[in-house]
Image (cartoon, rainbow, N blue to C red; front, top):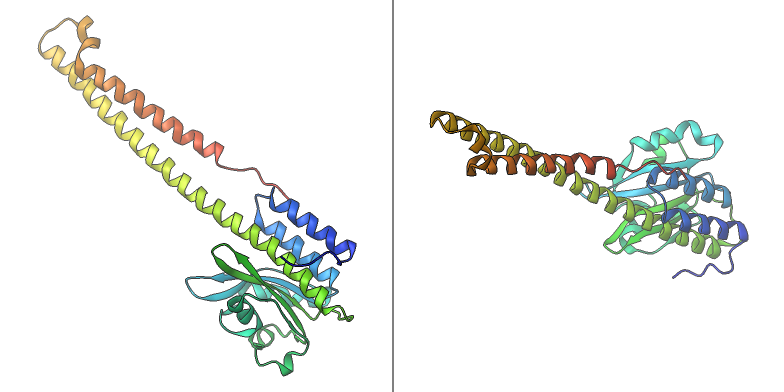
Length: 259
């Protein structure tokens, strides 16, 4: 647990806002954009970004970044960039699971210049904290060129606390997405099973009707025939499954909850 008791009121307010938002949000992107923008403003930094780990490719990418006005024109380039997850200060923080402060990137061997070369941005100092979850580290939050006023320890504690909230939000979003995919799969199974039962039910019903006519039996006895009863049961069951599948479509599609 990071010590944040000595943080200024505006930083504590952001921590409170994020902690509250994590319990209520349904869209991760606005929350991350708000967090990175406010962190950049509070630390008077030139940039703040969340970097997430692509586990299959083992690369870090930039889903969200907030840049100062002077760098805004180049910030869109970050959306298209990624780099190996083991390089740079971000890679070190991801694998070590510890925050890091680099006051001079030119004298730190961990610094990866590839992003600066691709964007034309000059990174002089970095604050970076890991996004830790129960299943492991899923990325980092990184602040570029913050204004340093002798509060490096407090800045790092603040960023680490923010990273904890962001990690919870990312984990919640991933769990929700997985649950949604599973629900969609179950709904599809119900729909297909329902349609199959309807087809089989119709076949049983038509078969019973044909047999009844062929045997010249009274039509009044048709509803009591086992084949007809089976067909009706399958039709009802199939229609019910299709109805359940359509009902899940409505119940599992959440309304947007903007930050």
